[in-house]
Each structure stands twice: as structure tokens, then as C-alpha cells.
Length: 119
Image (cartoon, rainbow, N blue to C red):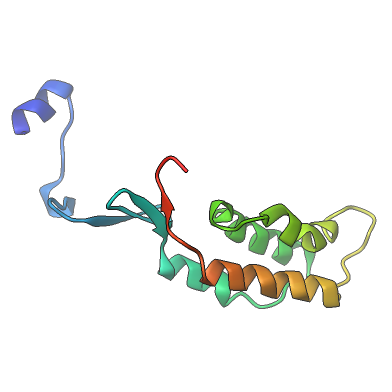
């Protein structure tokens, strides 16, 4: 293996390397066994996020949640009441519909299914 790495011009740090493991955490996902799933540690940040009180906070929440949009069916439809609040000239006014969408999205993210590669 070392010869192949040298031939390719690559090096590895043995202390940071792991071999023969079934799963690895990578960029907020857990990759392994032919599947891709969300990292529960990262999802907890989304699930514990308080209701936004400004456009900046809402953008941050939607950015975090959007990273996992592939796991949420109808993501755009669910977030529609939230994205409307981002439009210029509308003014940020948190309402009951936005709260329902916010809670629904958080619930969907907490109950995501595993995604198989290629789907």
C-alpha cells in the first residue's frame, strides 16, 4: 500500500488514519455500508435551534437545514412559509404559519431515513 501511495505522490498521517472501519463521519453525514445518513450530532444543532427573530437567524437556520434537504421530501414546499419571510420589502414578521413550517421541518429532520447511494 505504501508503494502505491508513493507512486501516486500521496502521503498519509498514520495517527489520523483509520482502517477497516464500517462507517465514517464526513461533512455532517455518516458514510458506510453503501448508505449515506445524517450525523446525529449535526442534526441536534438544527433540532435545538430556537425560532428565528431576524432574517439573519432565519437564513442561518435554512442554511443548516438545507444541507440535509435530500433527506426531506417536499423540502421546498415545507420551507415555503419561511422563505417568504426572506423577501425584501416584506418585513420580518414571525407568524403561526412560519412557526408550523419551522416545527415541521425540525420534526422531519429528526426522523430522516437512510439514503442509499445513487438515489
